[in-house]
Image (cartoon, rainbow, N blue to C red; front, side):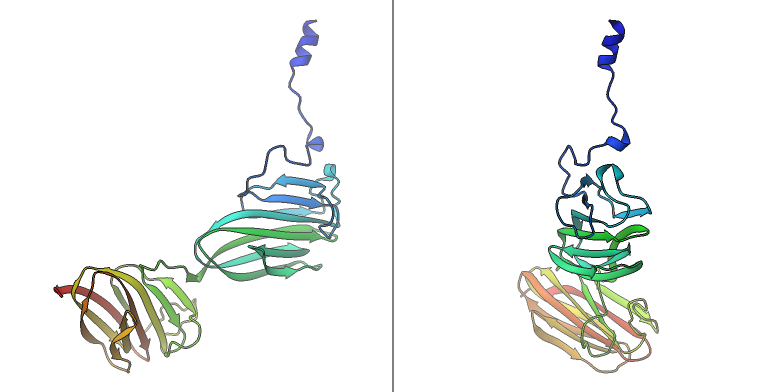
Length: 293
């Protein structure tokens, strides 16, 4: 009797080969929901659904099955992963190493499609707003080794910037022409750059000479008379609320200019445009209240 009672209370342990093929608890939206199919086409009902964690996908099955006990073959299977991930505003680089096919969607928009037999590394860039985004990764293995790895990082040359901080748009020409090759957060205080004969960023393709920059921001001011002091080598233009307040767009040695403006209390849009031709590259701006309106 005692032995029988003890056996009744003994906890049951499910062997790994008999673990359930479908989750007992709901999978959090911030975790990868992995739907595994016993075919290459993601068709029909998944043979297995599991929580594949919240990290970046990195699977190396080699010549093995993701789960033989759930009826997934070693070859000719497919997977769909979905999750919600948080991003800061900016441009992001996605890198994918895969054997064989892959598709990636972000917010239902197809960003990458290489649905073929291959062993390769791929990448793409995409601009994202700050907040949550829905990611879907689709994958298939035909035969041989099976693997997929997906990671992402913020683009070193493009970052999101708050409206009340300096947004620096850098161009690889002296005319602010075309698309910027770098967008970065240049802080919220006074600008003061002394690049000398160096580039603001060789990594982002900005030359040491013949480049240009547009800085813009919203600036909260009290009601009053303000003096803006602007230093440049070479050309510079300055705008407040869309009106040009200074135009010294020419080749020149280091020079400082003063602009006095009567401004109401509130937020104002400030834009500073600059170009460097040759030699030293310098630009700076500061301001102070010098009186009342």
